[in-house]
Every structure is written in structure tokens, then in C-alpha cells.
Length: 232
Image (cartoon, rainbow, N blue to C red; front, side):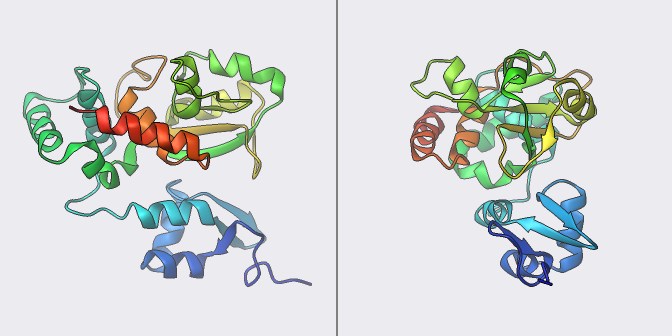
């Protein structure tokens, strides 16, 4: 019998290896899994961690400041897009606008990981149209870029943000199942506002950041172009 904890499937690493790559303890990795900051599958009594998530988190290790809270991350993204972010008080808006002016969105990218944690699902193709129009979902990434006609087609994939309070209902309503071969990527936002989402499409600032996480080089190129325009 193969020991999956020592020879995980391609695209996965053990908790011990994830801890080594991130420079944290195994207990911290398990907490990140529990908080949905790292994607993982449970095999018996062990967790196998998504290598993609580990590498993304390692590349975005916060520099020059602590990671923003969810409310401040979304406040900054909305301000960068010229939107009001009404959940912020006057002082917070001033501080975030000043940071944005000093460092730009690209310089703050590593501190914005709290905007939402990706969860990957598979849906029957017949469910995708209904999912795209679900009012509980705020479209982002290639899906939003396609809707905005930015020269990128999303194909048969739906990507967007969902409030943590609505995740289970969306999964049930659209018959989603967790998958290693996803055609649905839901970025789960820890609840912080009375109502969510604020719009059908994510602000371009968030779309840009999500495109940078896309494995398609065309998506990353567009992400960099949008990022260069955001907050200016």
C-alpha cells in the first residue's frame, strides 16, 4: 500500500512539506486549512495540501506591513476602483487612500490575500449559466473580464466571490461538488458587511488581482495591465 502522506498525488504536498515551504509550523498549516486559507483534501487521517495554494501564499508573503482585514482589503479594492466603500469610517478611508497613493495597488498586493479564499468545484455544464446570474455571486477573474469584453474569454469556467454565509446554499442550489478539476472557482469572503455582494461584477482592482492568479498567461498579462491602471 502506498503511503499518501509521504507520496502525495501530483499537485499536492503533505502538511509537513507545506509547513517547510511556508516557513511555519505544521499546526499553523492545519489552522490555515481550517480557515480555508489553504485548499486541502483529507485522505484517511491526513491532509494533503494543494501545492498551487502553498506556492501562491509563499509568493504573497506580506512585506511592508501586515495583511489587511477582509473589510479593509475590500475597502482598498473599492477605493482603487473609485467606489465609496461605505462600510469604512472616514479615518479608515483616509488611511487606505494614502497607502494607495504611496504604494499603488501592485505594491499592496501581498497584503490583500484576505479578500477571499478560493474553493474549487465542479458543476454540470447546464448549471453554469444559472450560476453566473446568481445574485449571491460577484463575478471576477476571467469570467468578469469576459463580461466586460476585455478581450478574454472565460470558457466553461465560472469564477467569483461569495459571502461565507451564502456558500452552502450556492453549493446546494447549483449542485456543486468539490473537485481537483474545477470549472467553478468561488472565492469565499469572510462575512464583514450587512449585505454582499455590492455589485454583480467585482471592481477592476479585484478582477486584476484574480487574473494574476490564473494559470493562463493571457489572463496574467491582462491582469498586469489592469493592475497598472488601478488606483491611479
